[in-house]
Image (cartoon, rainbow, N blue to C red):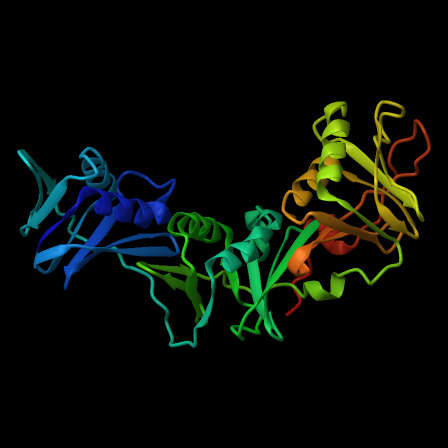
Length: 384
């Protein structure tokens, strides 16, 4: 194999391919293939493969496997405008640039890249739309014992593609307009794979991408890249049964106003897990205070309210959830006195956060609340 290409093109392609290997050791191999005016770099990790293609002047087609960190570090040491020549033999890879010459050993084993195991029909979506779906990822569980909720679940509903993630106490759901892709409950993308794909999409900024799904794998292709991940081998819980019913207890406010109030209340809250009380009465503002610290913090947020609500919840969890809603205005909804808080944003985005029962009597501790089974265990029921 022999190819000539600018150092910048090689460095960018290697960096993108290594996205799959973030956090892995320095022995990660990269498989380099040169053929007909282009060179591709493929890195594979546990359940993930990323292939990046760059334009190159190919003198001799061929392929080679070397250590990704060594090749990347070497190329990064040259000026971006330098012209790099890569020439391989059976045992070594030679990198030439001006008067510089380096040799890297050829690794004996080619990493097995993932591929779709069956032919499927793909759909096209905007690159930013897939990032919108992946905004639900912060709600996914991190407990390995409940592996079926450690990723995000995608499914088609009518003319929408919906993504959901939950850890049993909070849930995020987002949707985009898209052609039909999947209707079963086994389209679960692992969180680590989703995070690698997010990094890849943010760096490449593709206008349009193609999504394909087989029984066990999910592939995303765009200009110059292909991403493949294994799916979580499980069925996702029937989360729809647990969505709260529509309510007349509603409040709408500016997102910026609520974020500011949460920050002010949080500044005086004690403890690592402070409790926040949120309430409103028909026509009045949103009222925020700390039930465990009577009189220490009280704030009001201008809002359009209907009905009434009063509930307590984790201040850090509510703050984190609101950060996933980029809308200018937020819609808050409470169906039951002890039920969850429902947040709605633009493009049918939905968030659910379980509340904590509180008597709201000064000086009293929170009562023990009999929660649904999925909330007590931290997992939703695995409905088949």
